[in-house]
Image 1 (cartoon, helix red, strand yellow):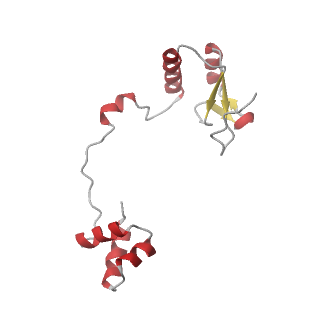
Image 2 (cartoon, rainbow, N blue to C red):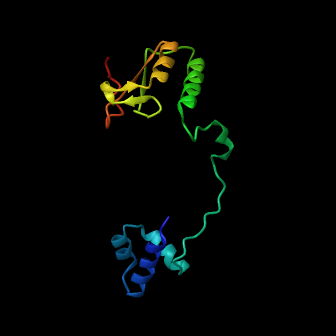
Image 3 (cartoon, rainbow, N blue to C red):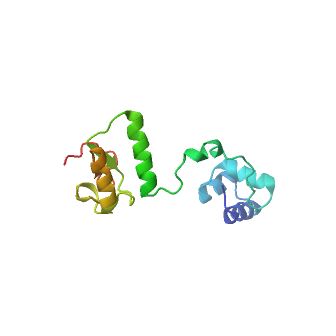
Length: 137
């Protein structure tokens, strides 16, 4: 959505006889967005009136992901899968990581104990290499 400043700039440039294509290029927005602002002839940002698509699924979300939530999530996943791997790859989240990253990652003692309880170790990918699935201990 365009900001009020962008909308004001579009209207101002239009009064200076700048083409819609040039306005879009200069401001880095689409020509469709420029046309919509010019049609509205207002710099006010419109209010969005729409239903939240995720609302029916809200109870399954973890908006505040803490260690407890992580352990609940993993426990449910392990039960659903009917087993556990020896390594669980994480994304360097503060929920599990005490310090370090990649091979130097040290898990929070509480989470390391949780992994031991189920028979796995947390491992972290190197920062900037989230697709690294060939991590070796």
